[in-house]
Length: 496
Image 1 (cartoon, rainbow, N blue to C red):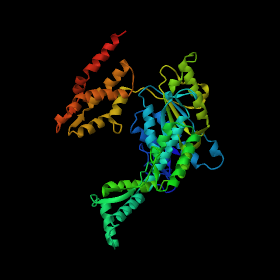
Image 2 (cartoon, rainbow, N blue to C red; image 1 turned 90 degrees about the vertical axis):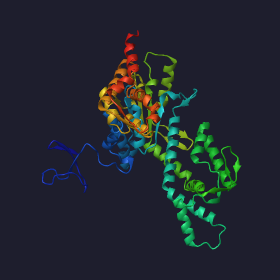
Image 3 (tube, helix red, strand yellow; image 1 turned 180 degrees about the vertical axis):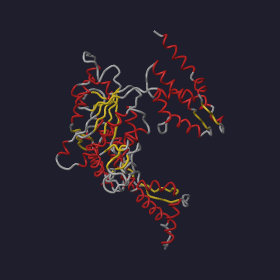
Image 4 (tube, rainbow, N blue to C red; image 1 turned 30 degrees about the horizontal axis):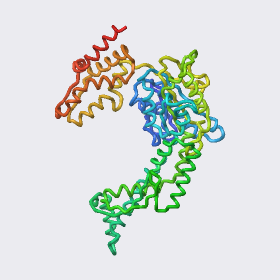
């Protein structure tokens, strides 16, 4: 709940939360000042408030507030749905989003940053890679299968990270046992000292003979099986047979070619043996059935698919070209997925009813209305991204975290070259980028990378010889290194 008091927006405070308040002002009790910077991000990224999501996106993306808000609200609604009990929870479906805007306006960057913010299974796919079922190429259901693989890997990584300390302790215990196997009457004090030496690295050069299994990670097996692109039923049967053979073989394991290989004794240094033993012990904490079960639940409740280049599937209504027919077929496949259907994957059946779809496209030659009406209805939230201006480019170069200029400075620091960009140089870079976009193909913020690369090309090549020097890049420096680009741009107006 918000109110405006003394020209400031204030928000209601529940419980004993601490905030900026004026106890002597009547009416302010129970309210806290809302500042421009949101509160500290919650421990779980799944609980980020819309304000916090927008704030995080603002660190990397300039403008496009409507798109950021739409994505932030969609993420928050996933959390809200999980807090609801009763049958109504199953009826609440995500409001899928369609983002339209010119190339380089921030659509893909929003997706990329969203993937780092959310703890949800997330995948970005290109709509142009899909074809209808029965036609050569990937069918639209493969994006759901890929999303499941992402979720399985997330769950496996979480288990390994959670048990990393225990796995390391077990590995050290095995090393201690291997180092003292031929020593009689080893005291507990000596074992404790040996453990400390291994943990600190003091015993790294000691040689030890350990028994190692030729372990192939589950993620590698998963990728190999998925690369074969076999029907899910056959894939599941092969995995079951593989597990049965593994149990029957006991100490033997199956290598990547399908042959059995016994455990091997290897003589290594402690430094070499410790990570191998730790990986082997960590694998013992992974229960594949539990990982798959949690992954499927996570995908069905929290999965997000970012579908880029969806405008390439649309054509003008009067068009009857082969590309139009292909695009219409893929749209029909997407229609079923966004509406909600069952997709059979190698790990089990996934229902797409509550997966959030975020589609985006430039829509240069077509408009969103050229998509199938039914598909438009499954993408009810429409967001338009605006073209970026020279002022936006200047903010991108100065306000965003880890921007292009920061990256140049970091790269040159490795050569002991201190690079400084003056304010007039930044202004000129932004102005030239906007000018080139207006007179040639408008590629948005991607033009900045081209311009900055051209400016720093000479310096980067001669950086080793410039070690220990300071390089100041000002407006005249920028103009001198961009004269060829500006000359080519000026000549384009004479081309018919």
